[in-house]
Amino acid sequence: MIEVTNLTKRYGTTTAVDNLSFTVKPGIVTGFLGPNGAGKSTTMRMILGLDTPTSGTATVNGRSLRKQTAPLTELGALLEAKAVHPKRSGRNHLRALAATSGISNQRVDEVLDIVGLSDVADRQAGGFSLGMSQRLGIASALLGDPSTVMLDEPVNGLDPEGILWIRHLLKDLAAEGRTVLVSSHLMSEMALTAEHFVIIGQGRMIADVTAAELEDLSGESTVFVRTAEASRLRTLLTRDGVTVRDEGSDGLSIVGLDSGAIGRVIADQAIVVSELVNRRNSLEQTFMDLTSDAVEYSARTITQAAA
Amino acid sequence: MSPHASTHSSPHPINLTDPKEPTTMTATLNRSTTTDRDSSTDPTASPTITATGAALRTDTRVTLSRVVKSEWLKFRTVRSNTMALGGAMVAVVGFGALFASLAGSGDGPERLAENGLSLSLGGFELGHIIIAILGVALVAGEYQTGLIRTWFGAAPDRMRVLTAKVGVFGSLVFGTSLVAGVLAFLAGQALLPAEFTALTLGSAGVAQALVGAAFYMACIGVIGIGLGFLLRSTAAGAGAVVTTLFIAPIMVDLQQSSIGDTFGKLLPSYAGSAIQGMETTSAGWGTAVLLGWVIAIVGAAAVSLKRRDA
Image 1: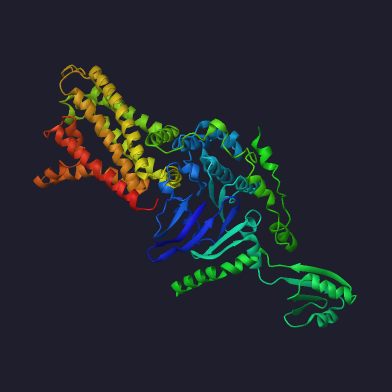
Image 2: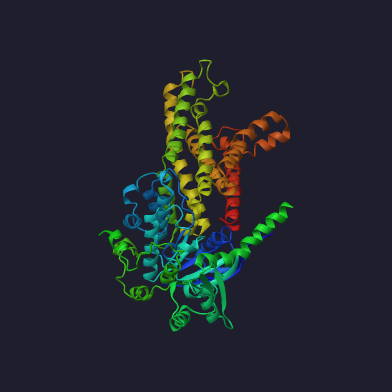
């Protein structure tokens, strides 16, 4: 379990993280989303005890990581995939990391097997592709069999097979009852794995929601109907609280009625339709809408600075 | 047991259809999470990620001796580290032997010609540069790749990491330098022309010179480690260490004044020489000055580690 309480980080006059509070619960994958520069990595660095918060706290299983006696078993983290000595082999990298906590070489072999690097583990890590480096980083996060796993943009650089693998891994980790926090700037990727979303922008909380709640934030759903009798249907549907717009000569988009209600009207009036479809804002679109203020704000400040 | 087999047989359907397609998105989000919840209560749910029996779950506390072991593993698993350390020792023995063999021939360094002991330890000068830069690079390199942050995540007590790095590199340099010094001395005795007084390891001043030379070398390595933590950059650290150890003495020598003379006695290079009994000032003075430098720089590194973000 990760608990972030009123966490703030300022660098000079820049506020990277602004009074963030959220809880990452065990048993599910939590997606940590925001545009680039939103403060995700800074937040994760504070959770890992690398950066000292200006104010507020970040704890893992009730204590700040710097006060943990066996940190690798509490929190396994991947922050930077390329954070390896280029001339040290992947296996030796893990062995040295394991040694800090008395973790055996047997466990090192085990995590190499889990991430699928067993065959290349004796090669110098500097020669690893970004995808292989991500796997090595994930292996180091799993070393201590931790109750909490925190990965910063783990999908970067992975090939489609690797992306599929990581989705399964994240779900498996959560299914085992672990706390899983994964950051990404891609909503479409997180939508496939996460059940809870923490969305930030400009260091501030934008949404701390379940998948279902996020969908509700997607705004009103639209129903699209294609029929030769578009004008007749429009008259039948137009009433208080319902907006009907023409889309081309034979299309209608309707807001304010669900597809079932529209279907009943169509059946009652025996109107022939060639298409009836629910149109939802994609989560990607919702994410963009939610974070657009944050992004626009930064664009504006750049313009102001230039002027 | 193949862990992949079981990882891939996850109960979740793989959804490869375009996530922008509206109905697909809804279906994905509304996927039942009941299976996840149920399996979390089943201890045998996934044997893949959990450590198997003896592999873990004993005692995973971070201790100083474990961090020392980890630092030692890190040092010896990168060939350029062992090559640099070995190279420094080859320089100590090789140049010591070279200076000894050239002594009295008119080609050797005249300044040292009257003392066969200091002559055969002349190779330490080159060794100092290598060890100083190696010390800086060991730490600064970890900052530059980000490796240090992985380490602080695993061993969050930064003083422990500093202590382990200083201890491992300091004792490694001391031990190897002592061996290299003895070899250089023996080679020197074998190669020095007959007009030099023959010395043995038991002769007056020899043991002090050898232990002093190794101690000075270790202090240089530790100063390098400290500067690595302070400056976090190999280039800046190497510049600082070369300036302090090698350029400052030359500047002071050029000064030719009483102030310059007093200042010169506070330099690490002078103290290192005094420890070996090769200056008019006592070895005790040399030890005090050298330790003063080590404490100041490692102390500053400790303060920086406590205050600055990693």
